[in-house]
Image 1 (cartoon, helix red, strand yellow):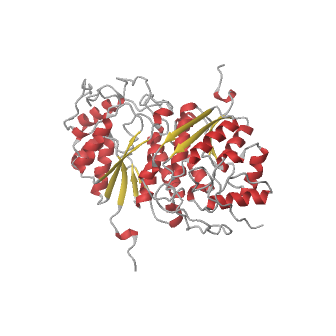
Image 2: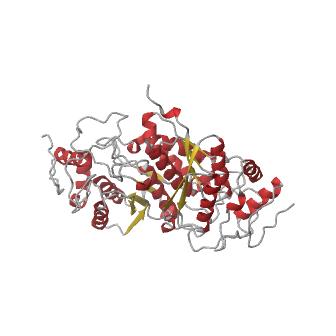
Image 3: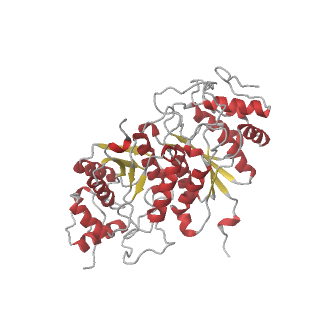
Length: 243
Length: 243
């Protein structure tokens, strides 16, 4: 009998943005005993300091394989994260976003593109899992963070790759999708993630400081407060979090 | 009452590779009365002459908007079209490929990545249609050309974009999916496609001549013969097509 794919260590491709959620996702995958290859996408975002954060996270987690790929989504436009449009600050994050209220920081089809790239690499290297740090609880109301999108994508990936033909399995998972930011912070702490390496801000300074005012900064800061864990983030102006 | 999206000319993003099928697809979309924006993806393919073909096709069809975007899928490997692996020649194309026989020219998740990029642009520019020249009859057995993949992708795109939230429609269509190569050639002729501009070959010469031996050349040549239309393709060695 030959060695089957199943007998090898399961392996995963994990999207790694440099933010907190993808760092915790990668650490979660390592805890499953999987070999984890990280994929960082340079997509023309204004906050290039994210990329340095992704490298630090990969190094701290001991990921041996970390690949960066460029796709300039700013050529399509349509987002404050790639265009010269102001990132909104100090919006209320207390209520869940209305279902049709998609913020200007949404990048058209970003997670669809990112997941497709991760699947392409997973297929080429024979990985069994694709992971994304999407979260649908304390989030900005992006359609591509919803569980029904992730589930539909997983089926599409199966049908559109060699895997759907050979019967090999490829899962597409968002292990944080149902967690609150408090739970994500606690899980990350338990998994040994050094949050000082991560950067969640939509509009960081050139020196890599988080702005403290955008949705991402506010949600992150509240997560640390709620988890009763010290927030190591360096902010330009620390967010005011209600006690 | 304001002007609604529906009252404007419907618009489409059409993937344009430089091959025959995508050219006929773009011409088909124009015939629907749609404004057609073409998207060509430089994906690290060995046959860069494809890109010149895409430009000629866009010009001949009078497409005012033609955007090119780069994503280097050769960084992931796994295909004869991006890697230094020989493209098979003179395989029998007489029988449909077995369902688990995926040729080395398959590029992992290529159509998934391409369609995702087309959806990103369609969302950003407010287009209602995304088009791909995929074909599942006279094809090389690629999983991402199957109708069930296209249908699943369309639903995933709806869920993962603003459109699924606002209720706007975005269709993802492969109008040639059920046509034979003979029917594609005939349709293209009727729609005024100048086939001399198109290049279907997996392994063209640097001067842009088709090899004549790869699956794509053989399928294309047989399509012209079956349609009883003169093949204007310049081949290194013209394929032998059974009468």
